[in-house]
Image (cartoon, rainbow, N blue to C red; front, side, top):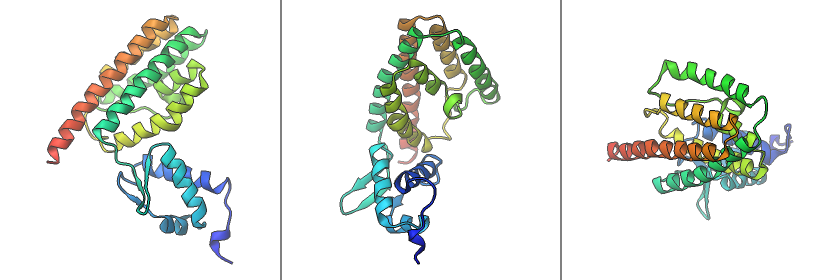
Length: 228
């Protein structure tokens, strides 16, 4: 009996997509890497059907590119792609901050204080380095998006925008980040949300994303220059 008939826990395409997403966003599969159906089917001990379905899922989330008659590869994001992502990010996250401030609760301030105190300790060890955040409840932007209470904004951010941003950062993970400056911007946004000031919260978040893009754009330009 073929090992490819074995079934592991969870629906096969979703399981495969989850594993491949981890490999891609963890940097184990680099941008441009070929994702051959036969090789992946052998690796996961499944038929090519679930592999094809998984690759289609990842294509929909924007981290895999599928070219007819050529196959699938980990997506390579251009500077134009990055700019477009940040434009959408500014719109969605500024609205998320505005909504979060409109529905702020008694525990909002404490939640932000606990989170940002952790970040301050981490940033303090490398103030000019990248602002590295954990996933889920340790990510300032994710916490803010959840506070907004808008499932559509949250879905677009978590299923499409954030995975593509993570893929973009893989290529530039060793480039100097904004560190302490980004932390101070987060603190101001958190204060506006906690104070229940939607307009200021939205404005500060938009400026924060724009500042982030300015820094990244300079990094992209320098990286391109270094590779010439």
